[in-house]
Image (cartoon, rainbow, N blue to C red; front, top):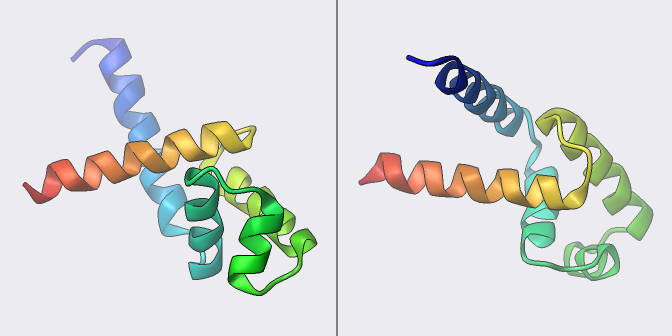
Length: 88
């Protein structure tokens, strides 16, 4: 196994742990971000304040160890593809 493969494996493991730590509401907020929705739209859909969506996104980004919404959405897509591949 090369160093790159080891680093990727470690990163995937960290990502799995991060997703396991997300609350149900944080997962719903991440799903909204992954769908390209604005905080205002996510807040309306979930019946919460926009500031609450921002707080959830801050927690999501911290738990997934990413720095912005785009990276969070990419991580969500990576996990989605990973679970589909494992199910087959």
